[in-house]
Length: 408
Image (cartoon, rainbow, N blue to C red; front, side, top):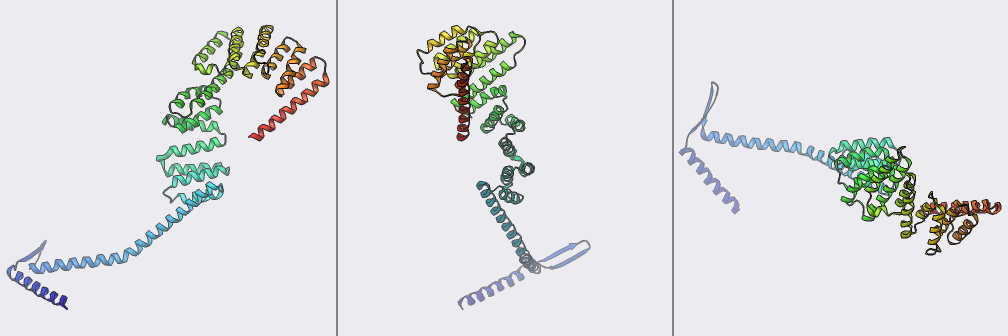
């Protein structure tokens, strides 16, 4: 009741004020358009503006009432579609993790087109397709991934490389990796994949050039880098031995250059020493090869070095005498006994070779020892025993092969 009285009082006051203003300021408004002119009082113009404003407000409210439900419906549809795609993506990624390749490929590729994570969807689907062995689908999905997000071409390229390497397609992966390496020379993962590819393709010179980057970017630890360089240098020495030039001076220079590029600690690795010694013999440096092997053997007693020492050309009697001197230091070294037996064979000391081989077998059962003993017994005319040791050697080879398979 009180509010109504207050409203009436304010309305009366407002009306009186408006009446006073109209009487006090009677002015007029003139609107002219071309030859037409319209004149009306100031206050009529004010009322017309207010009326026009109210009319516009009403029209806006009407349009809002008509359009908003439609906009809301469209928005709801988009939200529902987004939610559906999210569920499909979630389901697809879960399938991928659980090894349901067909379902993963279907769900991820189906939800990719309208997904904010289209690149991830396509890459996941491509991995699933690769597991199914569908190379054509892999190519299609990776192509769609490139179109979905051209800014992340490296992710697509690396996925392509991983899938190729997974199928042992190293030759196909190499140009992609080389292009990535040219653009990202310090990327550890690219470097590790390139190292793996060069190694499997036996591109030892390229792998040698990569060593500095592998070391600088800490792709491998110190021991891993050492083992890799030993592998490279041993392979390079074998490669040089298999591709000797007719000009012996060129061969010696090539060997000298290669040896000069090696780190000191790599030069002392048994496989490198053995391969270097064999190559020295091939280029006419048998005395140097024997000296180098003798020094290395005294440091490591490695079986590969001992085997190489027993196979050198030259003064066999002298090497046998030196090796028998080592036996005082290493009486229970089966590899040394086998090497002594081989030196005896080269000197046609069959009985002595037999003694060394039988002693070696007591210490260690190795297929090559059985084979050597079988040959020696054959030379001594003991055919039955020779065949028996050949069979025993074959059994050892079979047993070792099964053991290797079991460990794998």
